[in-house]
Length: 393
Picture 1 (cartoon, rainbow, N blue to C red):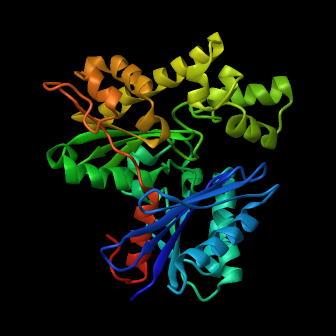
Picture 2: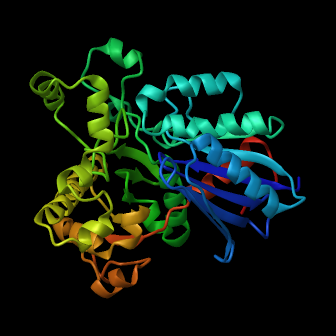
């Protein structure tokens, strides 16, 4: 079938998108994003060669309106070629969705029921789905889930030590960033197949951050759990927190559930500790001691959890960095490597400064790689497969 597959990856204040030709030989046509949704939104679109082909800004847009603007730009760019499918990143699939799903009214209702499990992400994932269903109901849509990659983990890795009735109600560890881990593990299998067949930790480090322990490409353990709050320090999210802290915040500070939610999702992490920014680049440039401490805490938690992932795997053969910080911040990679030296990890400073892809020294017990993630390409392939379209390479 000729035509295009569009991919929508909606975040809390941005929507990334990509358009692929279904026919092999010219996979990516355009990609772009609208940033600053809810503030001062701006659109940038580039072609497959990275040349900017469209830019626009607005005084305000919500996610639904932003999706409409993306559809208009896409129509102009692809001209007469039809969009034959739209694939969406959906953060939470709950217990039910362990594979991509073609979207209908019943699936949308099921996704809405999962909003309490991912309040920062799920509503924004659903908004473009509903906008496209209203504007172009003839185009099939496919939901691709960040949780699905982890469904095959051992049962013990998915359990909390709570009474069984809560587990039966869906209170368990799900894990997230699965689309990123799926792509990176696939790329590792192409460029370092022997390592990919072994025990690897992938560090997805960005505004959202997590680690995943993989054995032969399969998820064994991950730092995120029931929600995308757990595990590592993130841009505005706290990461792992003693549950007793929440009870104390309720009793001593009078915080209600929604106030705690706002605190942990939007006002903690690098932003909360530094009091300056959630952006690693701003913190690296800051002379303030609190900025340095926020970075140190971010790295400390990563190093501790790498040890945890190595324990879950019974040893470790390699480490892979991905995500905005993992791919671009050589200083963070060096600091994490220094803290993980006890595992036999030796970084090559010149390779690390160059950005890789291989950044470990020759002879290092652990191989260390930098692999840029591409969630949109994974989503396009899943949409293709779900609808039995011609291959997107």
